[in-house]
Amino acid sequence: MRNKYIILFSTLLSILIVSSGCAISGEEKITIEVNSESEYVDTFKDLNLGILFDFNIKLPNAVKSWVNLWVERYIDGELESEPLTQLSYGNSPNKVQEGHLGFGMINTSSEEMLVFLYGPSVRTNPERIEKEAKSGIISGAEYAIGNDKVELELGETKILGVYREKAGSMRTFDFQDEDSINQMIQQDDEVLLLKIKLEERIINY
Image (cartoon, rainbow, N blue to C red; front, side):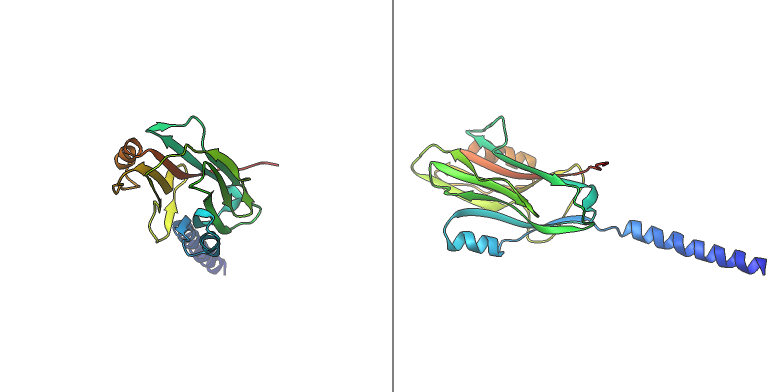
């Protein structure tokens, strides 16, 4: 009888170890994907408000996740000392958090543009940004990631979107290649880079 219990216990232990291993190896990753046809984007287009970069982000371990979202501004190749706008949030009480995340630009052709960032249940207030009036400027806004889901690694900085202004024609750049990004910054008159970085942060109450 004792041997039967030992065999049974060993079998259960083996199953638990295998199951645990599968759970770890199959742990869900943090993902983000372009949401270019969302209601948010449609509203911006319908009202002719400006430009909106919209994404869907999923944090499978939200209670330990911290999201840093910011926009870098380069004018004539020089980085401004402070981010154009920035947003940090995390440690959600929900085990899994999923929702919209993005960057909005209102009145992009005006000398007083408004910008804001948002995430699931959080957002910044619109900030007024002064712009120099220039003639003959071409502008463009592009997502820096493809339409497929992208996995985000902790500690990795990822470019999500790019807004550019330049007098004359614009050339194409690889937004995930650092050298290509640096060339774009030097060649264009103004460049805005929407960036994200995920961290693991545990708050003890």
